[in-house]
Length: 96
Image 1: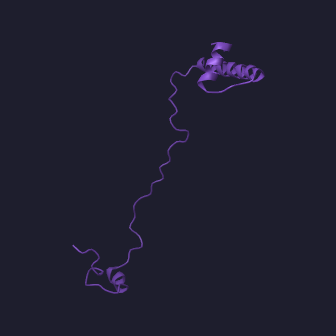
Image 2: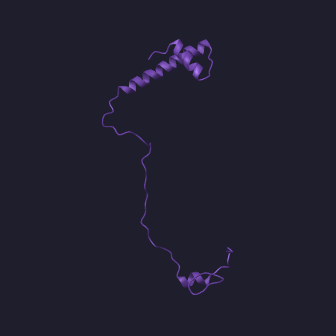
Image 3: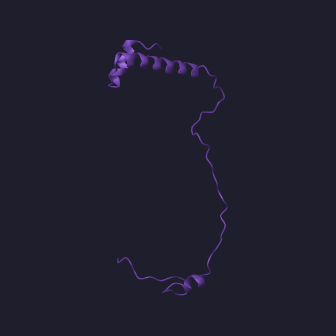
């Protein structure tokens, strides 16, 4: 694809931009370079290459679930101001 004045004017209009003549020539050359780079990338054989979805591979750092550092019921209830034999008791909060 060749970047000519009419195509550049159309792109300029779509982007709602207005360039000076010396800027236009520089930008036209930059667009040509970008299109040449894309052409070069299109020529690369990607057969058998999996598409890249994420840059980093997912890391799953899982650990085994171990029961550790439990309090005995008697020790836990000893710190509660109100309790019965099995549970900590608190005042009623919701009035139904």
